[in-house]
Image (cartoon, rainbow, N blue to C red):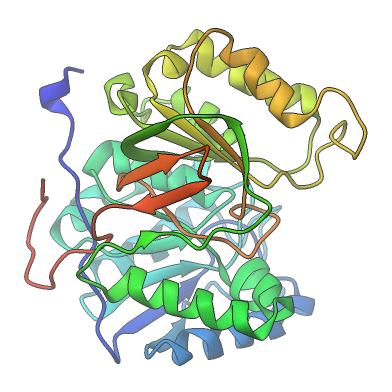
Length: 339
């Protein structure tokens, strides 16, 4: 695929006060024990000024193997939400292991006709990558219902909750660029430098899996990009291997910078263990002199700073800053892609 064939950036239409947000099971099931998390998510979203509805498959105890339903059923519900003009945003309930089963069933034309924000991470990051590849849609690698809004948000300090709620409200409704994301002392400069580029990424294993399908992002989409990734579970050696896959397929030769989320539950990265995550990253990057900012609050460690796929950002690793340089949503009157 040539550069001219790449879809232009497709920003979702901005939300307004009173718009309908639907919480949906796009992958894993909802265990009964986590029903309160969904109820807390409803309260959080209402606090942002939105109406909230649950999609029918989001039913405690409903499951098909490791999923909320069969891939066909999940795709049918997702497509219905994409086609429904009343639905203005979709929030995933959780991650899981199902999105690979229905990539070929998604109504891409419905997305082009009425682009909507889709929020989620983990398995949902696979959706963001595929939808961006096929339509140019800006996807929000951001918190979900069970592990995010109804989970890690609830244990965060009150001041942090308020900061995140305002950030997410601006993310979904604002016509101006958000600018610098709220940094914390945990952010680490693993390699200095300053660049601008479009954010591309997600869970590292989902990036690799997406690139193994016919829905892969064309390599040109990584030209000058700021690659962001995070991971949970598995082993440190797996992370090293995923990075090696991206080296072999040419991604690491094309990107201009890298942002790494807080690792979660990865064997071999315990305090005092060797290699450390920075050592793993720099080992695979080798001679590539690009800025790398590490330990940024997105991913399974939660709460998440939103990482909007496709949006242009400014990265200054030495100053430990990451800034969103353009709006994440477009005007309600927008009917097609924007440059």
